[in-house]
Picture 1 (tube, rainbow, N blue to C red):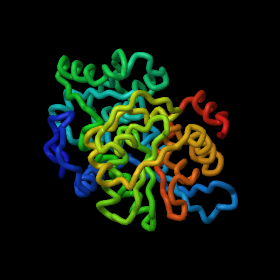
Picture 2: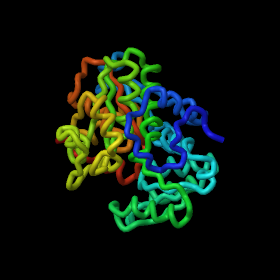
Picture 3: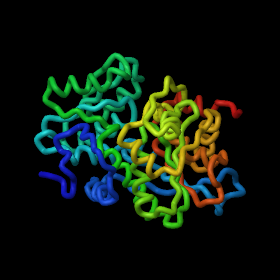
Length: 338
């Protein structure tokens, strides 16, 4: 049975959409999300005790989402757009992080077989997490071999290959966060969104700007993983030579083509955050806000707490996830300030 209101993308893993996602498509994507996708809370964060009760920064705590990150919103949206026949055969996608867990969880919930391709050498923590939610994990040589491996497995098994970077429902699913922000914090003036492949930023910026154009939407990237920042400066998607950030969830060396077209239209800019400031913000979130964030989840709030954006605005920042190992937590706690 087709899910109501979705466009005819059901047979395609990478539809190559030539236009931008609309606000109506984001709204429809939200209607089609299952009831167990959480409407995560918005929490005030003060930089020190003196700010208690008059905080200017709020966080959208997607670390409390099912699977510990925001990705199930897009995973369910993509699977909802796959035809019933294709869902029976299953899907293949590539991720070594939160999207792998999200697809595994969504697939298990909907009865869709899911194969996740990960590079050899992926941490056992990430492999076990995807398998724990029900996915089959296959391996490829390196990151450059991931999508070719996805396509090969899909051909051999008659499954649907999903390119999460370019799928329209990645943008639409993530855009549901923008709708919730405007409804739950109606006087918000500024939204801070972390940027990796740019699907999250594309969705939230579209939802916010198409609903309330006067609200600023600013992307945030690590200084050492700045592909989208460089791409916006040059006016086209650019592949950077390397990255070296503790925020490995924001590691893509190039933004997706479809997300890039959205952020070029809707984002008010991108600011960059130093590694020490990511770690410092992690500690502030944990000790002041009682919010456990993975490194990538601390990047957006860091822009406010380090004065990289207008701190006079009522601001909300996305804490995108809280999936981290004990070793990473220890590193974040012990990293010295610059």
